[in-house]
Image 1 (cartoon, helix red, strand yellow):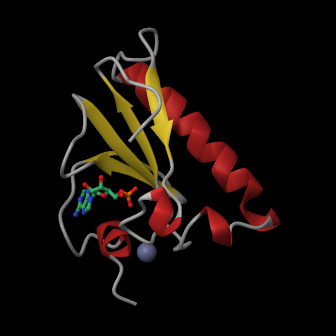
Image 2: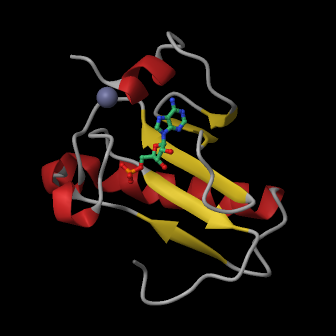
Length: 113
Ligand code: AMP
Ligand code: ZN
């Protein structure tokens, strides 16, 4: 499978990793949409939210806790930030390996484009 985020997990292509454990990696988005833009992914490949099942409940919960902690470390927790998941074509997903964007450091707008 030719998945760019699996290659990041396997260190086959470089990335700026800001957090890593046995199940999760977080790295800087290569094309940041804001001063802070980090992607959180499971190490084990999952295509998208559409492919989540009961076995992923703890994993997704852990990802959100890690997002919270990294946001605090990067000192954007108090001012606020946005967590984004794009699912499928109309959702704007361009990399088919489940990921959650942590975006912060500027005022967000609503609704998103
Ligand atoms: P999405 O559009 O939700 O699928 O988000 C994919 C994100 O991955 C985009 O924000 C891209 O800028 C980012 N991206 C793509 N390739 C890389 C890479 N090699 N390293 C870091 N971020 C990447
Ligand atoms: Zn993958």
